[in-house]
Structures are given as C-alpha cells and as structure tokens.
Image (cartoon, rainbow, N blue to C red):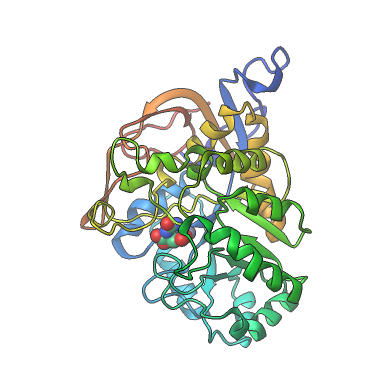
Length: 381
Ligand code: NCD
Ligand code: ZN
C-alpha cells in the first residue's frame, strides 16, 4: 500500500478529541501532508536497496547529498545517480530524489544553467575536510564566486555545511565561528542568493537565521532535537551518536527545539540520515553520521511531542521546505499513531550491516500508513 492508497478523504486530525484538549497533549493519531526530507545521504550501490525504501516509505521527496566518492560534481553524474536511486524505489512507491551538485573550487559557472535545465535543484558547499567525503570541498569560498553569481542569478539555492575546519578552532565552536567568518561575508556579497544553513546545531545559528531575511533558511535533524552531547558518552563512548556537526550542550538543543516548533517558515526538516556500515562506526576512528531514515517521522514526532507542539509538525515537515525551494507542496498524507514499537537492531547494508539510531529502543509514535518494511505490516488509519 502506498501513502497515497490510504483514504485520501480522511479528515485531517490531531487526535480523537482535539476540541476538548488544548495543544494536542494527548493526541493519539496525527495526519500530515506527506513530508519531504531536505537533507539526506543515501550512498550508492547495494546500500541504496536498504535506505531508499526507508525514506520512500515516509517522504515524497528528498534532497540527495552529493558527497559520494568521487563526489557528484556535474549534471551527467547527478542524473546517472538519480537513475540508480529511482531503481531502488520499490514497486508501487512514489518518491522523487531531488539532486544536488557538489561545489568545488572549480565548478564552472555554466554548469548552473545545465543543472537548472536538468532539474538539479541545488549546490552543496562542504568546506574541505569538514565531514565525510569532503576532501574535494571548497578550500576558499572566494574561489567559487563566479559560480555563486550564476546561482544567485538563476535562483539556485546554496546548501551549506556550516563549520570551519581550522585546527585551532574548538570542535564545538566550529559552527558559531563559521557564521562570523564565512556566512556573514558570503551573505553580504550575495544578498539574494538563497542559502540553506544545513543541520544547524547551536543557539547562535538559530539566532542568526531568525534575524536574517527570507533568503536564508535552516534544516534541523531529529537527532539534534532529541539528544545533547551527553548521549555520546553515557555509559561509555557511543559511536552511533557521533555525527557532524557534533551534538552540542543542552542549551543549544533547547534552542533548536524552540526554533523547529516556532512555526517560523525559515526552519524545516532535514534528517541528515547518514548511513555507515556498523564496522566503520564501531571503530577506533569511527565515521560521522547517524542513520535515522528508518524512523524519521517517528523521531521528529517524539521531539515535538516532548514540548507539546505536535500541531507544528506539519508546517515544519511538509510545508516550509517546499515553500523555500519554490516547489509545490505534496498532496498525499502520512499518518502517525501513538503506539509503542521497538526499532530493529540492524539492517542489511550491501555486504555489511547497518545499525540505526535508537536500535532496540522503544519509540512512542509510529507511521501507520508506511509500506510493509522489515516485517512491520501496513495498517490503515
Ligand atoms: C555525513 C555523511 O556521513 O555523509 N555525516 C554526518 O555526520 N552528518 C556528512 C555530513 O552531512 O556532514
Ligand atoms: Zn549531511
């Protein structure tokens, strides 16, 4: 059954008794316009067959990150990658990968027109060395100015991994320093370039976005809304909570949650689900990235529910991103039910194994109109 197969005329509702209770505090079901994931890693090859169905079961579209090895730096590569992703969408599911290009010091400005023509929707800036597969990233943003000019003219958004990489900057300060030394000058030089400040993790980033104009927006991950940096160290070193930008202290998590649930159009859903094989996570120098696509909406629902803001989830998950990108909102629906379930311990991942975030733990919300995946049978709402 597809998300669309559910009774499309069902009344949109927040719980069984909305009129009697304030702020959905005891809602039992939640029906949203089908959401989109505005920041996603699906990798390549056999791995696609595990992770693409997880995302397609919940989301109508997803912005696909280009940090493959080698990175996706031209339109031909992006279209070939899109075809491989579509081939991994199970029969009967509808899902649209929104492709991006990886910005290098040498991405030619005329590739932007070709990108636009081919439906490639954005360009991703990784400062060289900032994260997984970012070696080919930008060494000095001024080297990309001609390409950024072309993007500003064409209205193609720049997606930014907002962390500096200088070794003298403390790892926990990388995002705040990026705002001051990179983002502020960049926005001054390109005031009408649409920018998405990806996976923000700090109060400073929230405040900076809030005080900016409509050309700047930010994505927020479920894991940064749910966990602070203690999660990395509770009961031992916990590799599966390691991602970049790294989890921050509780005051920052609170600021992110307030932003996500504020209703502001500048904040929207981007899971940054970033799968790595378990043997490379549980390793002396473990890879950065949390896998969350298996339970994306469930994790966001848990975060929003924790501050009694489920009524704000649809705007964040299904409207704000599409509006910022200038794309139509989805027409299908997705229904969550308050029904405890246990996250599977692992998934096959090509020849390897993938351990999801919250493996073996109980989550309170569950998407009920997903397609049958790993033994959870679809039920209708
Ligand atoms: C991402 C990955 O593994 O590709 N890792 C992560 O920790 N988020 C890259 C990224 O988005 O930084
Ligand atoms: Zn990412």
